Structures are given as C-alpha cells and as structure tokens.
Amino acid sequence: MKVLRKFIIVFSGLLLLLTITTGCEKKQKTDLLQAIKSRGKIIAGVRYDTKPFGFINEKQDVKGFDVDLCKELARRILGDENAVEFQQVTSSNRIFSITSGTVDFAAATMTITPKRQKIIDFSIPYYIAGQAIMVPKDSSIKSIRDLSEKKIIVVLGSTSEKNIRRVFPKAAVLGFRTYTDAFSALKNGRGDVLTTDDTIIYGFIAENPDFIMLEERLTREPYGLGFKKGIEIRSLKEAVNLALRTMIEDGTLVNLEKKWTNDLGKINEN
Ligand code: GLU
Image (cartoon, rainbow, N blue to C red):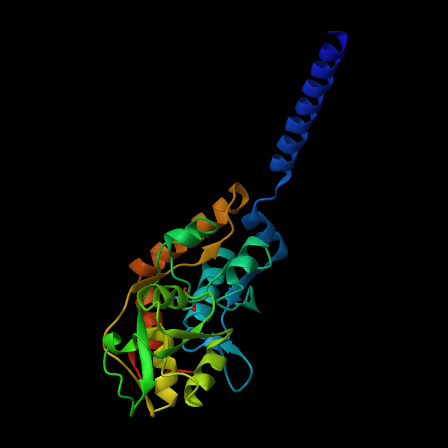
C-alpha cells in the first residue's frame, strides 16, 4: 500500500510538472504577426515554375500574380510592398515549408481542399482556377473522355495528380517535381497530355503555340494562401484575410487578375 501511495504521489507530481511546463511553452510561443513586425518582413513561399502566378523572368526576378499579391499584403500589413522575402516552393514541398515554419505563408497556386485543411489553414479564396488538359495541337485527344488509357503527365503533390488517378485508374501517370520538367516531358513526347490548372496551362500555351488547352474542366480549384495551424498564427491569418477582403472591395484583386490572366496569350511580364 505504501509503495502504491508513493507511486501515486510521484506520478501526480510529474503530471503537474508536465502540465505547468507545457502551459508555459504555449504562453511563450510568439505571435507570428508580432515576429514579422519586429523582423520587418514577411517570408512568403511562392512558385518559380507556374507562370503567370509565380516565375523567374529574364532578369532573374521573381514575378507573377502570387508574387504581386504578397507585395500588396506586405504593403497593407507592414506599410512597404518590398517588406517581403520570397522562397521557392513546389507542389510537393509547399505544405512542409508551411508546417516547418520555413515560410510565414505560401501563395503558391494552392487549392483549398478538405484534405489539406486537416494539415494547414487557408486564407479566404483569392482566385478560382479549374483543372484542364493541355495537348499538342495535332493530338487526337479532343475530350477528357479520351484519356482513359493514355499517358498523363502531372506534377507530384498537385490536386491534378490526385484527381486524375481517381478518375482514370487505368491511365499511366508520369509525375514530375516542377511544371518546367513536366512541360519538357510533354514537348519531348514522353506523355500524351499534361494536366493541371488552366491558369498554369495559359502560361505555357501563350509561349508555345504548338500546344492547346481543351475546353472542358475537370474540377473547380479555389486558391488560398496556406498557413501553419496554431494560435500564434491566428493574428497573421486575420490580417491577411482582412487585407484580402479589402482588396476584393477596392478592386485591387480584379486588377491583379486583369494584369496577369485576362489578356490570354499576352502575359504581362513587367
Ligand atoms: N492548384 C492545384 C494544386 O493546388 C494544382 C496546381 C499546383 O500544382 O500548384 O495542387
């Protein structure tokens, strides 16, 4: 009995200590918005391979819709559109870049999905894309229905990859890490089609007139900025959502859409 009582006392003591220390840890977690304000810049994950949303121009500058969006957020949150540092992310590593805290958020052609929402948080949607199919101009493939036993090129970690594997389980899926590599594979005839968002396909066909996009869309892809989950991220997410809502009301978001996606075939690079 004595031993049991001793054990209970020691065990409860340990439990109390654990509760106190984890409680302290929670309190110590710095609010990310405050941390950003004291460091004086946002660290944003963007794409380098998804023109016109995120790409590197001839001068080696990072440009695009998502890039401009981050600059506008930096202007509205920190008062300076240059108070943002960009880090490259891909379809397959962006969630890890967010959860590991490498970036404060990612603006990376990322669709808001229930599955992703289990791991990360999203802002309100800021753009609605749709999954589409790109083929060489002389391809016999005219419709999504023709894809069932074809070789389909995708980028790993994209919703397009998941959707196509689900809808066409018999198709051979060829996965790449970046859209640059995926498009090279299509050009070299390694696959019959490339599937991704219409936004990204616009970027390729604008510069490669030997390729076209089929009219049908497989899905609706609402883009959101991705954040790490947690109480310390809340005020940053709220500030971003407030800025996005204001950008919707004052026309800034529509202007960004016009600048980067309206004039198809003539993507603005400045
Ligand atoms: N928007 C889709 C996604 O979030 C496809 C584009 C991409 O690979 O980023 O997966």
